[in-house]
Image (cartoon, rainbow, N blue to C red; front, side, top):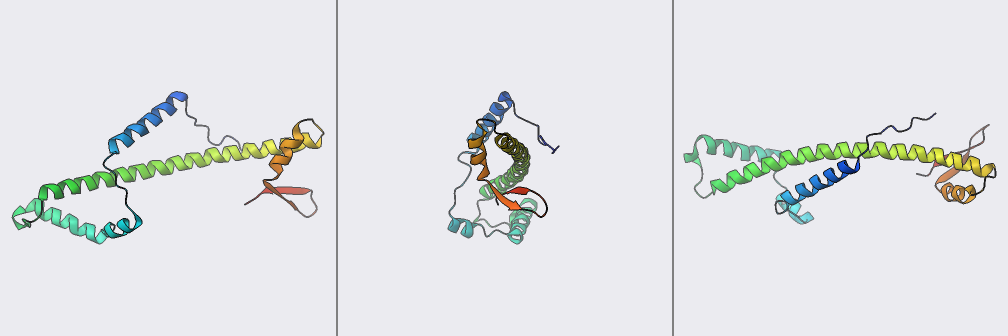
Length: 163
């Protein structure tokens, strides 16, 4: 018997509601704080690579340790706010990326369960159709379109999903 129900962690109605409400609250909290950039703008402003981040960190270190050496032309309060916001956003992005990977992996497992169950149901439908059971012909014909029929040596035909 094939391995079924690999992923059996399901959401209750209450959990679904809580997750959607938490997501809505997060989106509301971040509204006005996110930016929409064009490809050109991302290319223009995205030039702060790792080396340049080291420069920013070093300037911040000098500002913190010896402010008298800092340029008076810089709004240092704004610099500090930008620096702190950037650190918060980097931390949030890392956490959300990790959460996203976990959600994608859980979805993949649910997809796998659905697919395996669907293959079993298709085999059952073919069996019932081949045995002349009423009502299975249309279902069998509808499902058959998703499979290639290939002949293997010394065996009956096998079916493999289309790529």
